[in-house]
Amino acid sequence: RNDGFEYCVTELPVPPGISSASANGGAEVVRTDVTRLESKWWSTSVVGMVADPPHWDIVDDDGQPGNELLRALTTNPGNVSKNKAVGTKKDEAEKILWGVMEWASHMNIPAVILPSVPLTEFTVKNIINGSRNEKTMADSDEDIFDDSERNSFSSPLATQSHIGPSDENNRSAALFQGHSTTSLGNNFSAKEYTRLLSALSTSAICTSSHVQLWVRVPLTLQHLQAYQLLLSRCDHSSHIGCMLYVCNSLDAASLPAIVRALHNFLGGGNVKAVSWDTSVFLINKKGYPTLSKSHQFVFQLLFGRLGRTLRVLVEGNMDQNTAINGGDAGGSSGGNTKRLYYLQYLRHLRSRTPLPSILDSEEATIETPYLDHLQSPLQPLGDHLEYQTYETFEKDPVKYLRYGEAVALALEDAIAEDRLRYLGSTTTTVEQLNTMNRLAKLAAESGGYVGEGAGLLNVGEDENDITVGNDEEIVEVDIHEVTIMVVGAGRGPLVREAIAAVSRVSASWMKDYRYDLSPEEALKENRPSKRRKAIYAKVIAIEKNPSAVLYLKSFKAGDPSWNG
Image 1: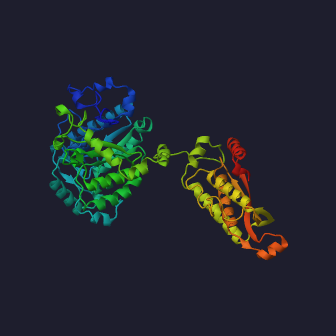
Image 2: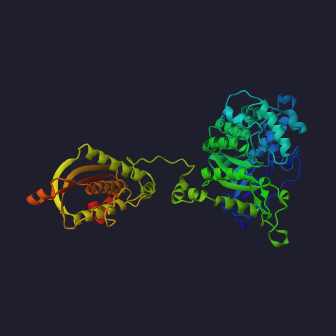
Image 3: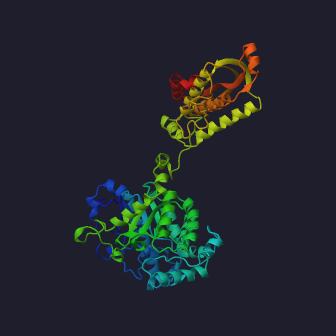
């Protein structure tokens, strides 16, 4: 926390009594932090991670936590009776997985990071000898990306950070050219992994303790599709989420295909977090970490879409970035976690335009508690809404402004088609018309919404005056009547917009005039020569909620624009 991180990631321990090590009298790993941290820290500041059991011999380590456990869980054993070693290790792996997940549930850990979906099938040789004997199987046409996206990315990115970029790219390219991205994620191991996650997501671990399952998804087309296929097979469970893992270089040629895939993916991928491996950072001239332009673009895309709910991790070995200097004295560069400068750089990207205007606006703050949560549908006809609910609705920056514009357009159409009832005419002075216009401006601004007063005409020498001339000049005004009924008025936002619309339209009509008589005839008959039009509006508010009616009456008693 001294470095500014809000949570840490820890490997989940294997509970005693369920592993072969404890059965054979082997040493068990003891966690001292369990007794040192209060429960509130485990439930708010710790994310768990499924890792390989410490007593297993890890063969062909590819640098990703939990992959050896994943191999044991998802290997196709063929004829199990002939491969008892495989069956035994798979049974132990399942017990370990359920055991660590139950411990996470017991500690009330909010999320657990799981290994990525296997793109290739693990075979019997794979688990016994530790070799990479892999086989792809395609028996389904399930696909979320079209052929153009696959063809535009004929050389996928590396998926494991410890393999050299050129070797892994060549390997991935060979797999990609030989099989579609569907086949890479549609094999026995992937299906077996889906079965396990589906069982976990519907168990009490997730449904009662609300532990989220974050599947690690490296940022490649194959992994994105494999995860989407898994999520679809799990009926898009809300307990299964994605942790995007940015662990490889991203050149300009491959960026368009990744961006197109992300646009499809972010809407339904249930993305919970993004992890930045230290290996993808470059080191600038001053020795501090930075990201390439392509990675910066991906950062902007992710945070522009999901920045209010997205969690950020920094992981990876530090020995690849020994060029970072300029830290504290004594070799403690990078703070207590050795990753302080990475966090500072990511926060710098977060503060760059346009992200603050998207994520830190008042509207964004209001919407944040409601994002990614199923809401009970409101029943305003059956239930009385709460004061806070009305207040939340009324902060919509567009809705009520559009209602006001619609009312104004309806009034203009009605007068143009002569559908408003004519009440008669009256005479007044220019000074009184100017006073009416000022009241119209007050009515238009009383709502306090975005665009308040929009469309109000200020014509003449004074900004509030609608006409120029002698204040004592007599003008004749034709009065037309309109009735506006607001059904379900709530706390009155639609009433205020209706009043403002009437005031704007009436002010524009009073600006225009016609000569009913020539000046000579007007003088002879002692009548004004200029005629104007105005609206007399009756706004009727209907509301069934007694508490909201009290609010409406308070407005009518205290707001002059509500009283003509």
